[in-house]
Length: 324
Image 1 (cartoon, rainbow, N blue to C red):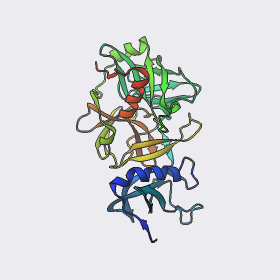
Image 2: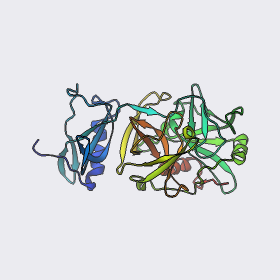
Image 3: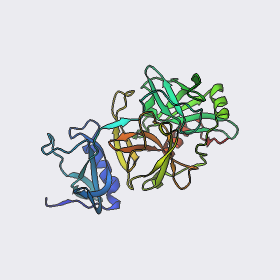
Image 4: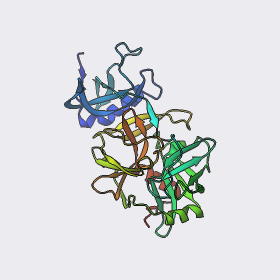
């Protein structure tokens, strides 16, 4: 098609992502589940250059709404890009269901239960606080139904112990969009039982000391610490360029999008891992992201840096990753 390009330049990425968001909104007629910049593939093989990639559940020979080139503006020019369409084999699945939680105390990657009007199991991303005491934990926002502040969170030292309330939801960023950007993260304020459980928990998990900048996660080799694995997962590379993924967990009435998401090369998460922590593989003291769910055969993560900074602005600008 004359005038339509396939290879995209790095300086165009932001404009292309913005145009894709307008062309393919949540619940779009083309059934696009997500989009991003990535290598074009031909017959399953990468051809080297980057382009606009659209993620769909499956490709159709005669789709009801054919996908046309996406038009964007850059420095006064109008450019059309022909997107590459990739089948991911399934819709987005939140990692907040499954069987009973495998409790292991209170630490990064520990199992928790959001005990609202509907209960959803998930995981702790990190524990934060002051220099003297832990005050909150951060987890995924989609564990909580819309408009249910003060939802209690349950945890236990082990699956053989009776779960107890260790804190309550205080801020859910899914209910507070930031300049049109949705962040899938929430803060839970710990009570006395939660702080005591944190001190008593004995688990060889990540000793988080810093959070990676959101821009440095793409292309990184990572490893998770998740309830489904009872500890560390296998290593997984994150795709090298940012993606936007549409999500609609059972606790939320409408789709929302996770912008600049980390999309893993394969899935290391399963139901029940939502909110769990992803770390840099070469140094697990560095936190990278929170588990959001799965897009077909790939895990999706919310960059932790922006979640941490936004929640801190609401609750305590002096927050620190709390260490024993």
